[in-house]
Image (cartoon, rainbow, N blue to C red; front, side, top):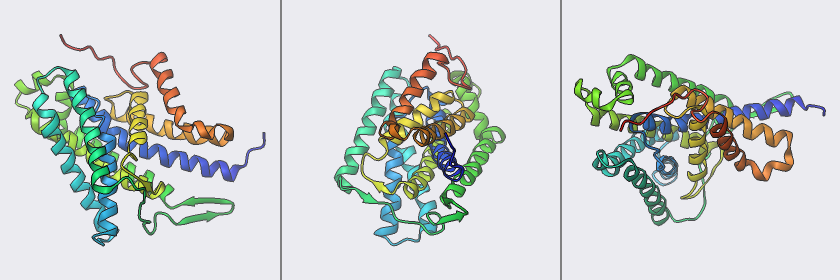
Length: 299
């Protein structure tokens, strides 16, 4: 089979772009799991709310896109912390299944709230200058977004790693992820650390939501469901609870989806299924993920 190199380069860039977006959102899943051993199923819906915040900020309130972006990050961070305080904190001492049920309930609440407030009519995410324009090099056509997304994700990951490994808050996060009870005895402010973790995860989801909206403009109240599931799968593939693993899992999943469709166009209708097949395979072959560690629950 002859390889169309310009088209292959385009698809690799597309896969890397999608993979970086998966990685950015997967970090939120993996950080919360690392701290609370909780799968925050509302994370995809926080992503959805961030898209709507950006949409209404630009189209209704006529705020310039460069001002909307940091504003959406702040509002979405506040939403993530509010959810943690209202839905998860009261159940801190409850059985873990209660937290899981609460997460599912928050997910349905956000989806239905968005349907009531924003209606279920599909909307188009506003086009942002300098991101959606095309770069043409010979026969290769790539959106500027394909260059910006990896750079933005790299900058955010470097900043996150600095927080986790070089700050007092990051030290607290690592301590709580290892042993919450011991960390509490050592003077770590557990509630503050958990709220900060939710805030950081929500902020990254907000950035991912706006970049996602530029690449896939159509949005509706359930727009976060499939990306949320795929990002959870990316976190599992990399080793949930491991930030580096979430990044690797997201990039691998994005490349897998795009390149399989490129090499086997007849399977394009099953693109979403590849993520679930990858999940089944990783659970069968390496249940802890590529970089995960075996965790034993304390009795």
